[in-house]
Amino acid sequence: MTIGTLPFWTNPDAPRSGAIAPERAPETPPPPPLLCSVIIPVYNGAGFLARALDALAAQQLAPESFEIILVDDGSTDDTWQVVRNWQSAHSAWHVRMVAQQNRGQGAARNHGARLAQSPILLFTDADCVPVRGWAVAFLEALRGPSAPDAAMGTYTTKQDWRAPRFAQLEFEERYARMARHGAIDLIATYSAAYKRDVFLAAGGFDENLVENEDVEFSYRLSEAGRRMVFVPEAQVQHEHDLTWLDYANTKMGRGYWRTMVYRRHPGKAGKDSYTPQLLKLQVLLAPLALLGFVAAICTRNPRRLGSALPFLLTTVPLVRFGVQRRSPATFWAPFGSLVRALAFGAGIAQAFIALFTGKALRGRRAQIAAAAAGTAGDQAQPRKESREAL
Image: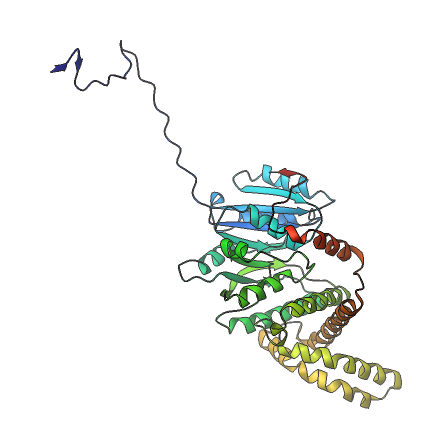
């Protein structure tokens, strides 16, 4: 049977005269949607950033299912070259690195969040090494229609020195406190997850804060009714401050910036899901304890130690917790608690002096704070990067 001059099964558009039809190239399936975006702020991270990237490459996720966004906060070392070298050996992973002027980790994280292309934001630090199940633990926690809006993971460490072991004991005590709550009101960004739409709708981190911007953002989310949970399986390994002096300096900064945060959220100064209530009492008792120790040494009179007894009693719960965990830092718990309380109290005092006198911060913190104050008004607007690669 024919229709006109062509068989009815003939395609009029087919090549004629015995020509072979060209093969149609198979359609390339669209890439799977990204499950999450891992955002890492970095400042002079050439010495340790590769470890974090290696850990992300070892996650229990396919390389094409997540992206890594590195935000360089004005590094002056070989951070960029380290990243280029790493990606040349790990081409299957999608890594994007952008640069900004040195304006602090809050601004860097906001920058990364604006660039992210997935519904879940995962944050960690450049000197952290996530365990293999880190990302999956967060994704499972934030899965489903009734999932929380944000989640926090944990620190671990392999260090054996006294100060870092005490710092880890301190963290673990706080984690045990958080685990007793169905919901939390504080998330630290060394191991954190947020729904991207919730993060952006809340305005992201306050770039005027040099530290504790994650605490302030958590309080803001909590006061807005957002639900946050604790995910202890989302672990990152970290090297804590190695010496007591470094530890004290860190705690002094925390005391300063936490005071600034409490000024904005006074209701959280009384209680939150992370801060031990005894710490606040220890800040008040620590100067008296220090005077007692000094007086006992100077006068060689042990009775002078009586003024330190109230403080020492407040350390009993941490000592008991250390014994239960068989922590090698248990013996140092009273001393570490005294260092922590004195440093935290010094930071609080510095904050009050700054608030009442308007005295500027010193050093690099002052520069970052000044830069943030000058650009905070356009926080929601994309900023022009000085360079972008990878």
